[in-house]
Image (tube, helix red, strand yellow):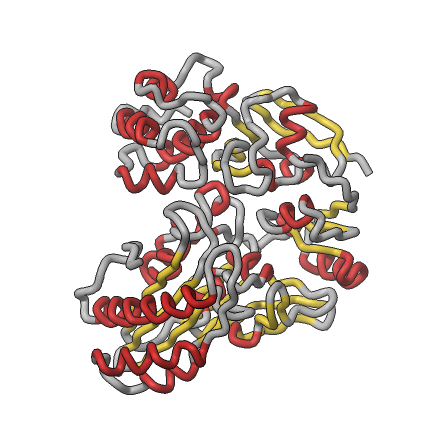
Length: 157
Length: 296
């Protein structure tokens, strides 16, 4: 039985028909054309499908689309509407990504962290991105990029 | 990968309505809170409910309260809400210690402690850590409300005492009256998110009382009652610790699976028990490692 859900996606109100069994990740990518959340493990382990749901990082492969009726979702497309954020610039500067598959998820996880805790320790950065797997970089340039904006973060999400 | 299985989705606005729906569907309905377990079970085809009952619309289930020495955690409280709660950090630091080792931030933003208790997998970290306290699952059902002591809650892998139409609305945890400190140690294959290969929780209370539990080494999280009896009233000594470690094989029944062998689990529970006892007692004396320090 289809149901129409309405939610904010990157600050725009979007409305879409979904089946109860539709996974949020598939709806974002296939019905709404937002491709930054990636299809990785599809079981919550890899973090490639991360978005911010009401400001919190979540795994869209483990959420039914029907659950987000009335909620607010931000992906990296929304994050960089007015240009790259200081964190994204820092990722560029530190060559933090190679293939880029994990990048949207890691940017969002780190964005959530810095929003709550503008001066994270290295341990806190590692904890924040522990659920985002990267197979290229060995994580070091990612952690450096996040630590580099520590203190310069103006709360811009 | 789209879910092939179709089901009805309902989001009742009240607990009474949720119970009514669950009573009607029985085992053909599943309760959805954070969904991190249920959605993956449905995706994998392991669960095929006719109805999914989303309880996120029920008011009052999202609270963490501490009144008269009793902590109440509602069914919608996520691991990260516990992790960020001042009352948890102050009164139940071992719960906070445990939350830091549950999956990852992105899962903890969604997954609930009560959902973890309802999933009832043997490696369920919440069950293990709460078993050292006087804890009870709050249940609402067609016959009214009841409380189930946590030591009676788990029946086996993915099995609890919940009956048809019943829903776990929260868990309560009594703060011990005596001075106490605790320690949670989780063995994993790597830093970052992983399910427990084994876990040990120790609660040390003033007057040499001890409460101990193990996770992922039996069909359910278990209280180590023989070891608790052995230690009762005695100050910790090297000899006493060795006696306790020798009882481990009588307390646990680990299996070999993808995460660890039976032999490794047996050995490591002894190692972790020793470290947990020493750390909890040292914390009680004000000299222990900070909560959150990895001891393994």
